[in-house]
Length: 295
Image 1 (cartoon, rainbow, N blue to C red):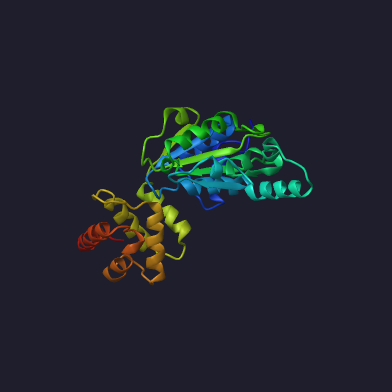
Image 2: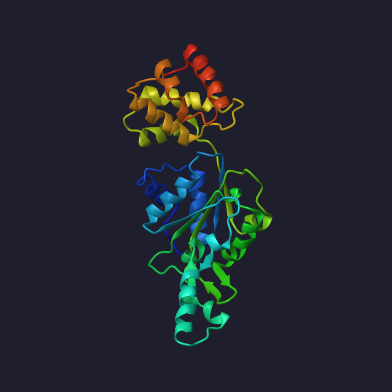
């Protein structure tokens, strides 16, 4: 398999150059997926950096990123391939104008085939294979998982009317899941697996310093401390590192040098995503500030 990185340390350094601070576990999972040529399934709570990891991987390698956003009802015509019906209709009309007759088989050939993200990755030609991000696979239906099995196992796509397309070099595949539903064993068996947890406060602070350089150390410390404690609340959408970044950015934009009532309450929309969560977080912020657990 291709040695995209000499070792895990080089991978961490290359990600660092893309402003993505990897933990050792995630770095090792990415390194092994690349070295072994296996798809990687990244699971974790929303906002822990799963999607961003795939983007950073493509940037670190200097290759294309192809993103397939999953949703309920996603099918082969949007993920694998489709037929260019307008071009087929034009071909029929041209043949009729010439007094010719097209057979159905003549309309389902490679010239009328439209590449969707997965087939595009299989047929990719270039010095490096693309990174295919299959984002939030848990939002798709069970049937879509079945459509992926051939591709994940063999880096190929079969179009019944044309044949099987096999990749010259296997695409680099990263699947993400928020675990909103269980994925089938058949899909999991085809992938290496890694769970990304919420970062520890020290690492969260390092990420925030890198991502929001204009924020003060006191503000970053306050926000990371509160966000970590807020995850123990009974929230609909517990805040992840993405929400912490948004909140620090909002507070810094308001000129806040520390977590103070005026800015904290005004900017809660950065971490509260439902009315109930906003109420709970507003009360928690008040208690957190009253306890003096800032700075």
